[in-house]
Structures are given as structure tokens and as C-alpha cells.
Image (tube, rainbow, N blue to C red; front, side, top):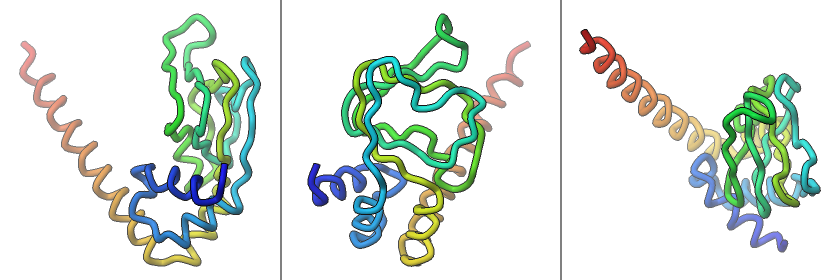
Length: 151
């Protein structure tokens, strides 16, 4: 995939949509592309994550209940392990290539470098995160009201 195509792909991520083009260029240039054959784990529940994975092609099965539990299948355009962009975190689920998958591995060290070098992108990320947290809080408040209404 060309550098321009990678930049365009990253720009489609809501988390990165307001980043400067040069910030996206650095991510696209410096982040490695990784391939996962069918059945290979990107990571397992409980693994320490130091990177998020942006799926470029293929599908990945996300499951927190083991092989027989409920699973969600995601494909191109999905960002898996987004919390790991900001800091080391433990995986809360297994991520397994359902079919051959290609992803951009976005290490949090690289992500923080981009935020340091591009303050406008860091400010855009802050706004996006605040907006997402506010929306989550409003959704929780609605659910709380529904639960309180149950008699």
C-alpha cells in the first residue's frame, strides 16, 4: 500500500480524523505493516499491549469468552486496542485473524512522538477524546434513568 493510501486510511479513523496531514504521514511512514495468517493471534486476553492495530484488510475475531464465547468480527477500517495508543494496557479480549489480515501496528511510543511533534494534532485528539467521554457519560446517564425506572 502506498504512503498516500496509508495516510488516507488513517484519516478515516475518527480518532485521527482531525490530525494534521504531516502527523498522519509520520504515522504511516514509521508504523510497520504486519500480516497475520488465518488463525494467528494478534494478541490474547491478558497480554500487555504496547500498540493498537489498524486493520487494512482481512477480518479479525474479537472474543473475551474464549473460543466458544460470543465474538465480534471486524474488518478493514477497524482499530483494535485503541487504549494501547495512549499507554501500556492489558488486552481485555483475544484478537485472532479470522482470515489473513494485514494491519498497521501503531506503537504507543510512536503515537506519543507524533503528539509531541504535532501539538495541533494533540489538541485535536484531546477534543475528540473529550467529546467521546461526554457522549459515553450521557449514554450512561440515560441507562441509569432506565434502570431507576424499573420497579
